Length: 356
Image 1 (cartoon, rainbow, N blue to C red):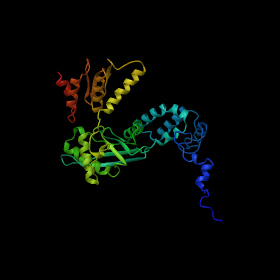
Image 2: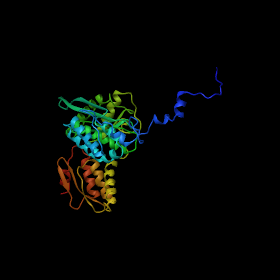
Image 3: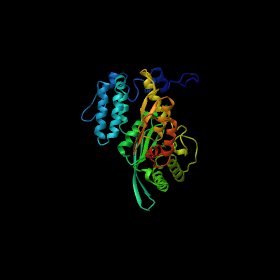
Image 4: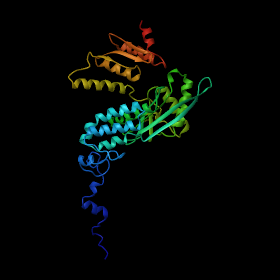
């Protein structure tokens, strides 16, 4: 018989709702059934094997889970000392989290590997017309929260291990900002400090020609980093526009061709963290004598904020050595150092000469 138009229609969706099944299909990550599977208690999660190599491997405590993850990192990347050190520090800190919510050990397992690792050749010509070749990288670590985002680093010490370590650190750091961005990192074993402007331009153009195949405003947004300042960003962005249909617009990172709104934020953040840590122990930064390693933009921002809060920065350093001011740096001395360091390749030794 034909049903009346006003009769209730009992479809599958309605039946599932009436039986209380619909609420179990999507479970937020914060609830016991999150991540994957439908385990509802920490005990049931612990019954699942975290690894299934050479037999099922389970854990009873967060410390055991942490050690299992660290051992797996050693097994996979025993030659990557920098990455293993970084991963080990984070996993040991998360042991208490794995105790309370064992399911998060499965997320930590996913972070043993980035989503994508890109390694490529960067061929360019120096001022003498000789062909030079460097290694370039871009590690797209996690896009769980948004497009990959992370700095580019040009330095002779860059290698696959350091790239992966920085990318892993960026997963945590970018997540803590609360912004809808993922984590990535890139760079090359190239030293811009002993190169001419023309050589840096040619290198950046060659680097971006290859990198542009894998990045974009909604995919991967590189930004400034070690050895990559405003001039390098200009060369990289110019080449990106040349090989893509792209127009400048406001946004985050390299792909709008501008400078970050608050370049001193990273250095200031270090000082604010130290301030809060001391206050929690009943102390303050006032009058504290502080040792600073480095003399780049972050280190100088740290020194500036320390002076502002009443602390006394007494050292700065670079590859040529270190400077020690017994009475501490004031804003006048800091401005002198900033002026020296603004010149590419300049070293702190010039500050010693200028102050004697």
